Picture 1 (cartoon, rainbow, N blue to C red):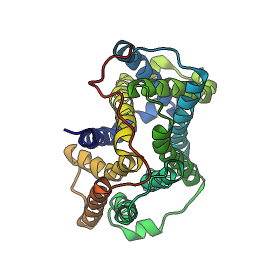
Picture 2: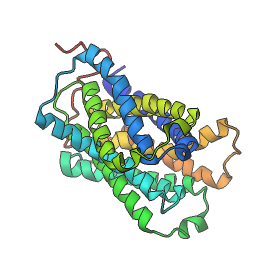
Picture 3: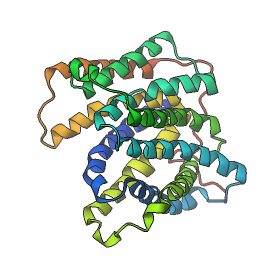
Length: 311
């Protein structure tokens, strides 16, 4: 299997894991302040991942310049997660899910500006159709519900967070300096935890830790391991292999996978009106993955799981 093929396999599995974070997050979000919950998620992920990175690749203290790179990456991630939680105080999950489908388009524009990555015309059309298909699935083919949307303060906040996530995809490739991707992932988690600590500090003293349900802690562990460590590593490694736009185009599949997870959990079949959206999403993702970008040379994957230990 070539590195390019491995990149697509890794992103397919990673996207499936990301889809599981929505029901898990929904189940535990009311048990703890959202900012504090995200802080615990990042901190636990960093603590669990650090020994693995130290053993496998070595863990020298990064220079100030390196810390600045990692802090910029983590600021984008924190901006997205923090913006999402703040936005949900003022808008609905349906609105945020719709806005999130703009991520691949934002990434494509950012990659063109920062990396000179140019998408062929079929891929550009596919990105637009993929966004339409994802919105179609989110609204279950109900055009009246889409037209009834009102763009308010919460939507503006989440749009800014979505832009941050789109920029993150291009920055991973731009700021990678040849270090093992696992080490880059770890320091992104560590600096992200620092950002979140600063944001959550006013509320930490108000948390009654003994009253937090055990299920919430279990959910945090799941999110830290599977949808933070694994998916962050997968995203950063795959970006260095197949490029940021192709990586972020997997976002189109999230509504589809979330609905499939719901079906496995006993939910009813989606209405027939959503099926055109499914087809658009799958077709768009396929076209983007098969397209050949120009103007940006893929970086060499220096930290695959089979890489040698750094000396």
